[in-house]
Amino acid sequence: MSNPRHWIIRGITPWIWKLLPGRQLTALQQFSIIEKDSGIQLLHGMPLIDEPKLKAHVFQHVLEEFHHGEMFEDLCQRLSDKHLYTKIKPRERMLSSDASREELADFFSYVHVGEMAVNRDFVEYAKTSLPGHIRGVFRAAGLDEGRHEKDTGDIVLDICGGNSSMRDKKVCAAWWTRRWRLYKQAMHEVGGLSLTIILSLVYFVLGWIAAPTLRRRLNAKPEEQLEIFREQVMAFEKEFD
Image 1: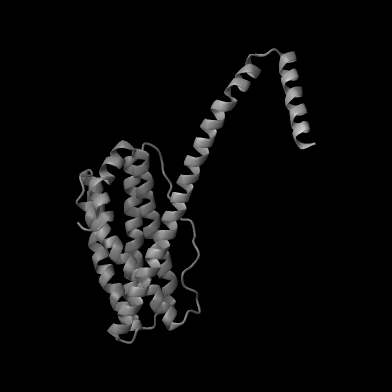
Image 2: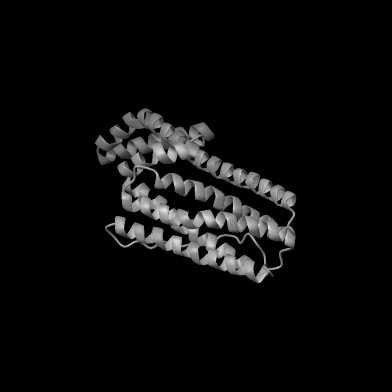
């Protein structure tokens, strides 16, 4: 298990989900959203595929992605004591209706590497120490993802005219695109965490400094509070006069 992500899935995720049930529900809902969104994106690409057999494969893929989304949503309902509604937030479409064949190859290459990553992740989730009914959902979804990986690879090869070298280049480029997007997402989350830590430190440091004045105001009588306010106004005017 050389992939650090897989080490986290197998070794850390079960403990986090056990200690933070809310985090578990959020993660499972996110899986549902991702699967359904993948189906929507593929549905947009179907009209641009000419070969009937490939179009049939993509349509089967779409149905299975929505089925996976429903599986995760049903699991969330079983784990929650209240009704949950997984809303899909429409994202910017990755493929326009007038996309060229090269854009179509780029799109399905990105779908292909995504399927490869999801397939491996689901295998790892199915091997964790999570409860059996949760592992069962990942195992069932993973059975389809392995076929999706092969099918999307074949679709890219067909779009590239059977040129395996060209397909490999497209897939390699898609891997780097995926890594870059994941990196930007991670940096955004780290930036948000860093800002939270900095603001918390500022709050506590300034809070201790301001505590004596605030305590004095809370304990003061109304006329004393008014006098304190006047002193602060005068100090402000003197500072910025």
